[in-house]
Length: 91
Image 1: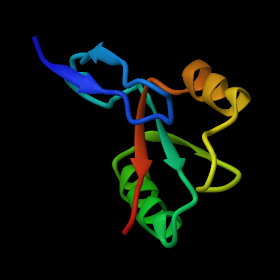
Image 2: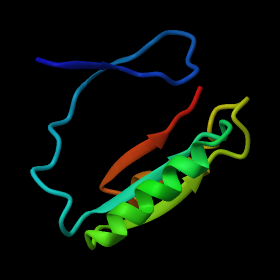
Image 3: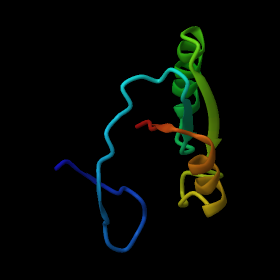
């Protein structure tokens, strides 16, 4: 079984079983999550453009600042609205 380490700012890391990736993004909504790092928005802009060229639906989400954990409301919105999520990192 594959495992994915949860990168959130919890006191103890939580191990979660990795979900199988979808066979295709057709008909799915891809969440593009900006964590607030410098230039991550540029990366996500380009990803969004390329997905639009392929007819893949996207929705944008963002943390208010890169220095804090995403508010529960933001995470809940992502869970409710997106089928898969790409997190825009930088550095």
